[in-house]
Image (cartoon, rainbow, N blue to C red; front, side):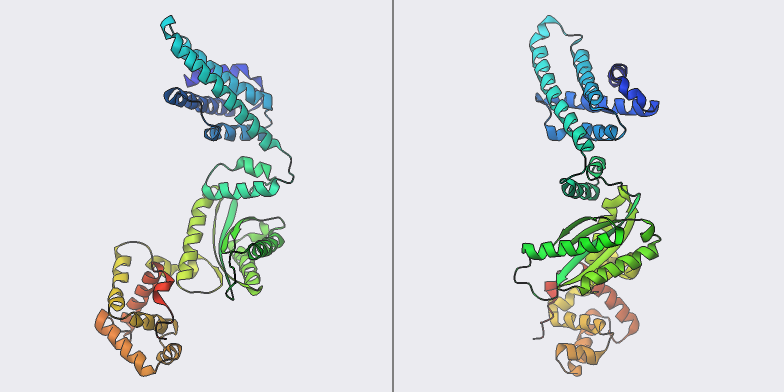
Length: 396
């Protein structure tokens, strides 16, 4: 049925012949197949498809608008596909089927109305000159790129020629001092403006970004200025530094690089790295996988990770201060005096707690191989624990 309907459309719409033969066959078959899916669902559910369900046709129309196929040809193709589908459906109908034919005919007429509206809307959007709506189109474009959804019509509407590869930069912004209202519009607008200005100065054009007052994501095209990866890292590291040195924010960022179609996966990877860096309290700056390879591997889900985290559970059960002391001991490079100063305690108190840790876990912080195991356990534990569970004020 699809082949027969595709032949009808191909014969009835000469404008498609301006495309390569293989492209014509693929486009017509795809267009007919999608219309046939709508028809089958419509007959099964006894209702025409909702406009929101016609995105498949909209994507085809957007692509063909970019190839120069006129609007009237796209409208004609969709009409022929629907008409031929109706003809194939009723060709074997008998007089006793009249009631069913009338119901089907009404549904086909409603389908024709909705498809015509969808084709017209998609075509006019794809061919609309850039104007005041360009900002909205950029927002829609980055949302589509991050979600792995069709993005071509948004790129055209935003007048953007997408690059083949992008640096995906995930950011977290925290204020250096406690804000009176962290979600106020002025704070958010200031962050947006600063970040977008800095990125625009780097790429020469407004950025593809999705930012909130707490951070977000920026997509940077792998242009000549941002290639090779070492040059990109230097530029983006400098950008993050400028954002962090401009009051009142501290900015932590992670970066991955991917093709445009792999952006959703790259975004997940960058966000995962950002969460890991945050759990490690690494502080502001730019981080990539090579900066936290050891910690990244330790925090991968699995039985080994579960076993590492289980090493520290007894400390929380006996006395959470022991776990807090171990964390500070590692953070201060195993310096008992620095740890004691941070705790506001005598070094002998630190020695006592470290001995208790050895007794409870079976691993002695004073013994290097055991300390390596305990450090790994801390990394695994912190990656799966909310920061509030280990308050720095436990000893106050």
